[in-house]
Length: 329
Image 1 (cartoon, rainbow, N blue to C red):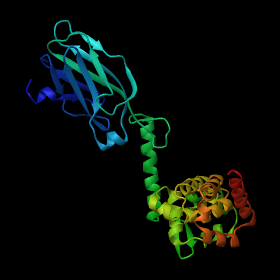
Image 2 (image 1 turned 90 degrees about the vertical axis):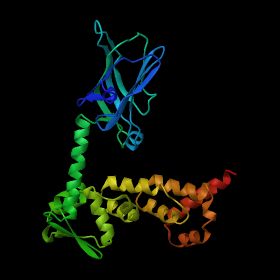
Image 3 (image 1 turned 120 degrees about the horizontal axis):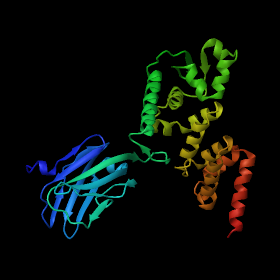
Image 4 (image 1 turned 90 degrees about the horizontal axis):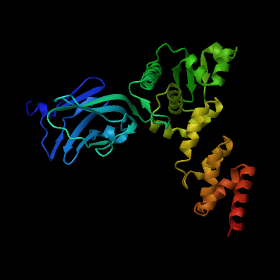
């Protein structure tokens, strides 16, 4: 065996084999990287009092951000004499990040040539939404890939105006869209196109309370290709549209996002929107920010202006919170 081939691991789609020749005592050897799934891998052998075998993915951004969760069978087959075979108990759903995550210490002495054989039964990655990890080979990966492709082409239908059949008239411009997509995402749009309303007859929807940019962001969300910065820029307009057209997932996305960056410059506006659109978590967070954390005293001028125009019931709730906080001292 040549020096270069001594470190080479032969692979098929799920199987890796490393042939070791004449491993001397007190020896460490690391394989060349080999590809299984989305990752490059290494095997190492270290012969001291025992023989230690390690399997781990090569360090990369992919490994750090989405380490493999591996199920595999690993065995050592001695090719000398009676062909001794040592099999490690099956490893199931083990996350591998470093060379310390899987170590197999073999007490039985091995001499001469042997083969390290790794059969990968499954490789999974963690799901970004926190649900169960999904296999890169199984139905989960296929379904995710199918969904991503479908969303990409759906977005293309909007951006390239492919077979559009309805016009959205915003306050300062118009955008072409598709009735079927709008109706599938909003019961309000579905009702418009199902009954003899002017929107059905004229093939147009007037959304005069949204700018063309905000309306584009709204449609981009519906079609699944909104960019994060676009979403952040138009959150309040999107919240209004989500409430008006009964798109609950968009309303909740806006709600969660508005919770993340409350400050003295926006807390009063968000408190009013929380009341208007019935967002209980946002309302509670704004109240706590103003009262418990004492920020109401940092924005006295803005708060005085707020008192002149805000809903009377909301003003009463704020003062109830203030009185309750004072009683606590």
